[in-house]
Image (cartoon, rainbow, N blue to C red; front, side, top):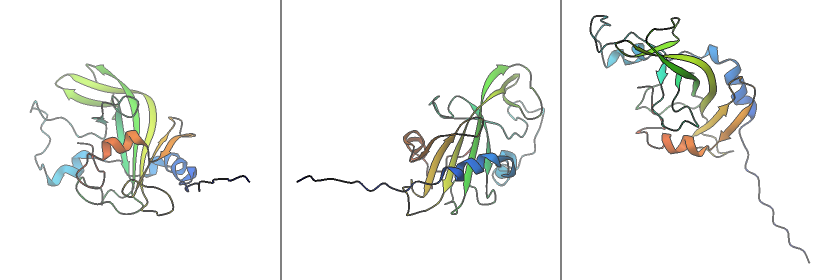
Length: 186
């Protein structure tokens, strides 16, 4: 007599959900730190104030894990920008999409938003695109989530899912958030 044991395979979110997000990423609103933080810091931009830098949509990742978006600069796009906040629970269907780039330090900006000023005369200039990093709020019971979130890493060309689902490196950092896995581009 032979006994067989079958493990039921958990459903996974369809690859096309993430590939479609990346394919149409430029249709998602670009997160603008200056606009979002206006309620917190209402001081106008002052080019003569040494510690104040121009508004930007390019950010430097605070992650130290260089196998992820750590050590790179990125642009953040958010599906529902009006709901995106660091300390609020995000609605179902929310999408956070990070387009990451390698960078070079330079003493001159590239222009066209391709540089992040980090000092009086020091810039991080975005060079080669790296991967896309996605967070999708699904609250699904059909597949595993991290408090409602599903993560994905998509190749730089946007054509291949490198990882998806409960990605340990994503969960490790986002678990440190105060609310709903939000870390924010602070």
